[in-house]
Every structure is written in C-alpha cells, then in structure tokens.
Length: 310
Image (cartoon, rainbow, N blue to C red; front, side):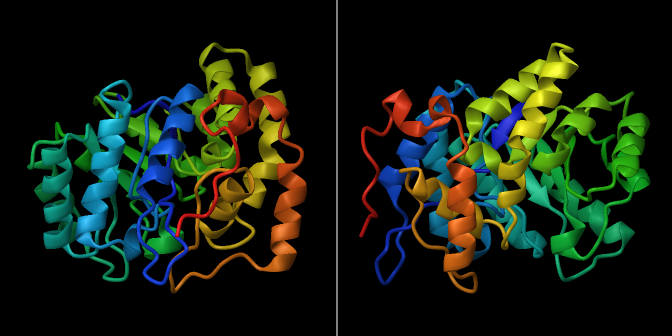
C-alpha cells in the first residue's frame, strides 16, 4: 500500500501573529502534488512541523489530506510521540478520520529500552491500523536495530519502516530479515532512494517531492521498470536539489523553496527560524535549474504565485 513517492508534506502557516494554519494553501499544495502522479501522501511528519502543531491542528491537517485525495492515493499520517499515551490519542484520531495508516517515529529523548520499544509499537499496532515505524537516529538519539525491527515486523499491523539512518548495510539486513513478512522498507532520505530501491526498498517518503514531484516520480518509475540508466540520470540531475533541502534544519529549506516557487509555505514556527539571506540565495540558484515543466504553475493548479496568507 505504501510504495512509490510519498511526499512528507509541509504544513503551510499564515503570516500573522498566531501563525494559523493556511487551510486553502494546504489544499492547493496537495492538489498540485496529486496532479504530478505521487503515490501517497504523508501529513504531520517532521517535515510538517508536527512537533509544534496542537492536537486540533494535527487532526485538521490529516482530515484535509484525507478529504482532498478522496481515497485515490493512501494517506500515511504522522502520529508519533515520545509519550505513548499521546501517540495512542493521535493514532486513534487518524484512524477515525480515515487515514490509511500511520507513521510513528521511535520515541525521542526518552531512549526507551528494548522492551519499552516493543510495548510502544505493539500498543499502537493493536489499535488495528497499519503502522509504519520511523527510524531517524539523528533526531531521536536512538537506532532501531535490525533484529528489533524483524521482531516487530511479525505483528500483522506493523507493515513497514521508514529508514533514515543512512546505513545502507542496516537497511539491507532489515530487508533480508523481513522477507518472509508482508513488510516494506521505504527510504527516509531522498538522496539514497535509488540504492535503497536497488536493495528491494519500496520507494521514498520524500522532502524534495514537495518541490519537484515530477522528477522524483519519474526516478521511482524508472527504477521500478528496471531502467537503471534513466533512474541514474535522474538521480544525478536531482542531486543538487536533494542536497539543498538540508542546507538548514528540515523543513526550513523546503518551506522556503515551495514559497519561492509560488506555492503556499509561510513561516516556520519557533524554535525553528526562517532561512537566512545567504542560504536563500543559494536555494534560489538551485531552484532556477528545475525544468519549467516541473514547475507548479504549468499544471494550472496555481495560476499565479500565492500571496502569503495573513
């Protein structure tokens, strides 16, 4: 179900004192992404600034995504927390709203022991909704080891893992040890989508697909068809953009990028801060190299650049 290019969508905010959710902007952004052939969508991940969303905003963003795609592609809603009770609340809400599954980051800061991790994920999976675990040691301070992933993969509702450890050897071992399960590994890093797919990975939960979904989808489709040369050409063509998404803490660069391209972005919420002038100029140079056919305005979704919502 959760295969292909799934953008981890930004959450656009208005440029007012409260930084309110930009509902119309969010709908427009999703419409553009859908028109480009994405295979699924991930609201309320770290790219969506889930850490600074209220419970009410969190649920509203998921509902907007579910309503907008209307069952045509799967919605994998971020519902993780370092507090199991909060993760349960968010997961129940996502299920009630109609999300097709949930993406659950491993608990950050707490550094739970092995039995705690097993109980955390099992409790969420027992809510009877597909669960994709999310391993990102750079943000959580703890790695989900392959043997632990293989053990959790035996739960019928734990259907995959978003792997953002950057360790290709570890990803290979996870795929190796879960081959007998109905379980996927999906890349959490745009820049290693190609090698992860070569190992049998299912695609990518992508930051860059917010900006250039057409070429991200084309690279995935080429790999899926076994056209490795075309996929490699696209990989290298996309590489400067993929790197630019991390010239500052995610999602600072991607929010600036979509706004520069005429989509809804708005500010990031504190404790993050906007991209500085030097990095903004660096980003503009990269964005100027994106083929015109990949630009959002060519699809009629956004007839003219969006004015910042207030």
